[in-house]
Length: 136
Image 1 (cartoon, rainbow, N blue to C red):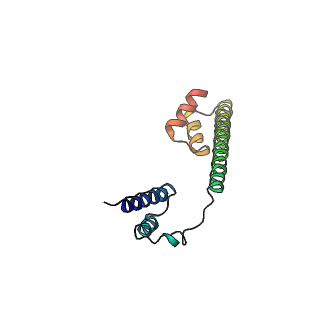
Image 2: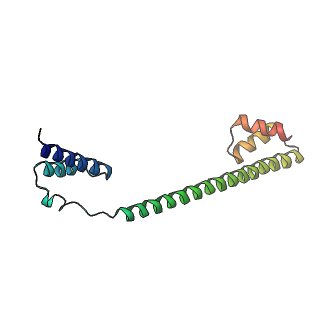
Image 3: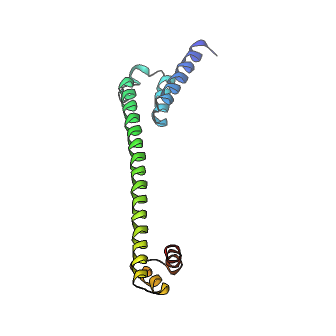
């Protein structure tokens, strides 16, 4: 094995590794390393797309920051939804309690109150019965 061949293979290997680090598509990387091995390096990068690594790093950092902010906003929105849901659940429970209290003051039988809750609040019989038992 002559030293030219070893040096050529070393350069080809370095080109391949560089292409892989830069996430160059495998077909393009093979083309570049083939040109090195065939000693056609004069124009081997002529068709390669130009890239500004520093700009790419800035863009990546900016995208990460935007993703971080979006994630924070999503967490805040989720918390607001939980709070709104809790408020809504409390309002619904107060409405149920009010219906039961009004019916009780009007001497409506418990079974009829259950029916009213099923109709007014779209509850199943089990849940309506639980609410009546809880608030009567």
